[in-house]
Length: 294
Ligand code: COA
Ligand code: MG
Image (cartoon, rainbow, N blue to C red; front, side, top):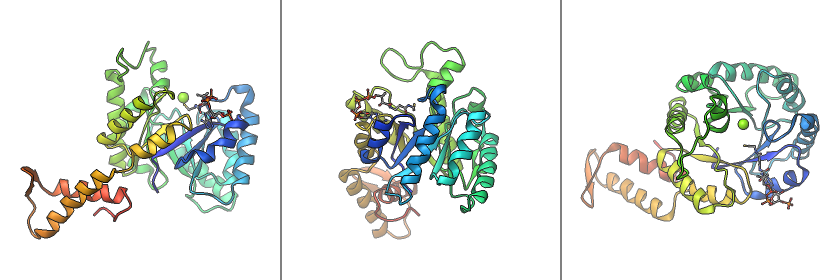
């Protein structure tokens, strides 16, 4: 299940709901949390429920819902109203750690049984860095498998929670605290064996900046990125799909090892290659849909 682009859509906007499926996103996140004011929560919940109901025959796009903060009454209402419409997953904001994900999982299990759905069909993607406490438990998500889909991170709620005046420097790069958090999310996701999803790029009128951010994220080991505007989706999809040159290079590495059975260290153009390089090449091909990684 590939998730390169994950497009947020405010759940109270008919115009945006009408547009979201044609954006080409791998995954759409119908938002009930921070993009919806309290007075609109109930209306948004109704719209999202209707929207999910109308999409019983799912296209290639997965339909997820971001619920309100898990310990709120609003979140309980979100889940009660929507799980029966079988969203593909729940984005869980403001988690404090894996315990919150396990608590959501058990609530989902009860609602799945009640709605006659298979247990475990609704996956969970926590935004795993929105509270200061959560930062210290990023290595503990393996126990949330198999319901856990991935980990993603956000800087806005965290910087506001600690009273930081900014989270980016003058050049637009993450300041040191947020680079730490980004790296912990990345390794935490891989330690749990789930997708690592990079945070959003807020300047939706800066395609070059987004392209660079995607390249950086993929270089570092993220498999996808949050989006907030349809224009960002094709850039993100391209950024997380191996290029023809990358595929050709990966094929060359795989072919070289295949031609030298029983040898683990080889050279190609004066560069040493050993088994991690082979695994990396196989991963690139798998990501391009050209065979599974070993
Ligand atoms: N999903 C679907 N459609 C969207 C969209 C989105 N996330 N963002 C914009 N659109 C639509 C707009 O409605 C508009 O179509 P319309 O003319 O038929 O109404 C078209 O795309 C172009 O939009 P544009 O005028 O460039 O932007 P905007 O001013 O309407 O919206 C934002 C800008 C940032 C408010 C909007 O992109 C948005 O709401 N993003 C998601 C916010 C969110 O969910 N945040 C929570 C996660 S952090
Ligand atoms: Mg938020």
